[in-house]
Structures are given as structure tokens and as C-alpha cells.
Length: 148
Length: 83
Image 1 (cartoon, one colour):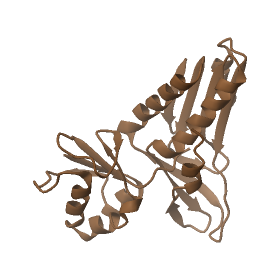
Image 2 (cartoon, each protein chain N blue to C red; image 1 turned 90 degrees about the vertical axis):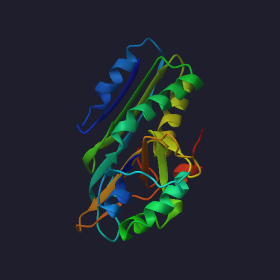
Image 3 (spheres, rainbow over the protein chains, first blue to last red; image 1 turned 180 degrees about the horizontal axis):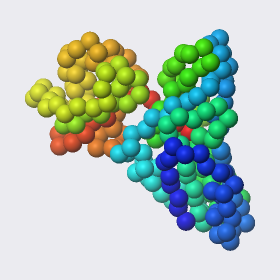
């Protein structure tokens, strides 16, 4: 079972993971990314605008999921990423994986979210409470700490 | 060739894409950035920091040394920040 979606709408993590539980394995692992307020001198982040490259995003996510299936024994995988306006406290991304035993699901989720941050054409712009807006810089930690 | 721009590159150039034919001097992506930068201040400014540019040719990530022969779409954008 492979599910990949790019959507502006909010989603319910529990509902999206339920199909993974029904696959008969003993393990479901997941990561949910949440928009945080990340306060600085310009105030809190109130909203994130997420831009993507529509002609490329889905195929790049498909390749990424195929790579995870090539590395681990997975029964199912879910990858949902929101685009457009996302307010602080809302979910941005969900990565979920099901496997017979925990190691495969846990490793696959870590791999998918690490690679998603460095290989998929998505860009965040932060809007703060003082009215300022800026594009988020690439985090060196995301590149260096790439686990796989 | 179709050019598409995203995020800060899109904003600085002032459009999300355009159709342009490259001159014969353009072989690689790097050559193409040199040529585009000569077309106006908005391009020069968008491409001033080469270290901060990423590329995709026909929807596949590509290094700046990749040749453009036969390519239909070149995307130019800053480092990705999803997740």
C-alpha cells in the first residue's frame, strides 16, 4: 500500500495512519511535522506559505518512496505534504510506514523525512506577527545529519 | 526551452516562468545562468549567489555542470526547505 498526496487541506494523522494498521504487520511508525511559532526579534511565526514544483513533486516523492521500499521490508507507506497557507500549530507533513517488526518502519520513516527535507522541491516562507515575511534558509543540520 | 522559477528566485526575477531560446554559447546550466544574468538586473540579482541556486532539468535534480542539449524545461530555485 503506497499513498502519496500533496494537498492544501488539513489532514487527520490518526485517520491517515489507520490503513497502515490494517495491513497485518506488528509495527506502524510515523512522523508528523507541525508549523511552530519559532519566536525571534520580529515576533512569532503566524503562518507559513508552502510553495512547490507541481510538475516534479509527485514524481520525486514516488522515487523517494520506491527507494525506501528498496531498503526495507515495508507493508505500506503514507506520505502527505501540505502546500499553500499553513497556520502555526497545524500539521505540515506526515510520513508513516508499516512493517512486520519495528526496525524497518522506524528506519524507513527517518529516511523519508530526512530526504524529504533535502531532495523534494518544496519551499517555506514564514510570515511573522510584526508583518514581516521571509523565505526559510536551508538548514545545514538537515544536510549534515542526514541519517542515510 | 521552458524556464521555471520558484520561491525567492521567482520573486526576484518577477515571474514564475518563460519560454526562451538559448544562444549557441550556452552548453551547460552554468553557461545558461551566465547568459540569463546578462539579460537584466532582476536576473543578475536572482543569480548573484550561485552557491544558493539549485536546478532541475525536465523535473530531475541536476548539477550546474549538466549540459542542456535536448532539455525541454529548466527549473531554477533556492535550496529546498520542505518537511
